[in-house]
Image 1 (cartoon, rainbow, N blue to C red):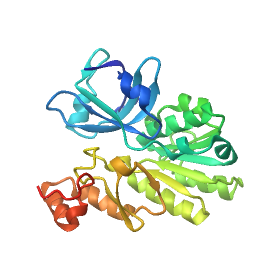
Image 2: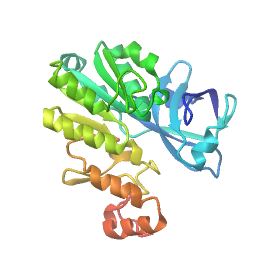
Image 3: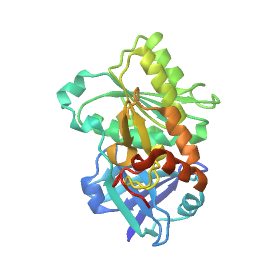
Image 4: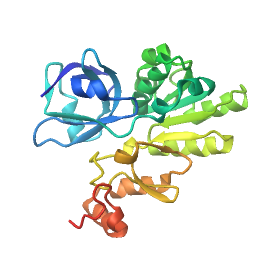
Length: 294
């Protein structure tokens, strides 16, 4: 069992938890994710790692209520436990494998949308700990949905906050802020990392392609099983088929077919849609064995 040491409500439907999981905390890196189960019969829920404390053996997760399982999960309190807390899964951020001196030469900007702020934070924190400053743009629908503001301020080179309704700091999308920084303030970036809803990442990539900024996206919104076997996170990346949970979750945003990803996400919600995807995609439907006929 994996005990919850802290359970905090960040907004009406967004929650943060510190979970006692020493092995995961010891080995996880920014960009990776875990899978939780509340009990033996519970749904497997993939969640990106928001933070970790190796000495205390704690892993921080942030989640949003989107269905029955997360609704139930939101009722857990400090002292309660998860039946399973599996990880780390997926590949670490490519930043971790880049030479630090090379990173220090780069101008990096992150764009986080909504709950995407959670997986952005550990990457920015890791860069800060290694002497690399990065600009961060955080966007949300309203002021109430802005999260980890103080934590992000402590590690970001510059933090820009924007809200769709203008209820906090400025009105507009993250793309509006990036466009202003580049076109009006003369900022130049060598790399953009965008994490958030698929539609948000799509429009970030359209803009950065126009601006000539290489862009990495994290395709964690489409993961279900987390091991490559369910086919939910199948992606077209350039001329290759990839699976977000085992090949990612990070990919070259300018090569990702977002329209296909969003269509598949909708189809995967129904039994009929899943059957159609399995029929259409054949032996490329699964990322595990690749030849499953069941």
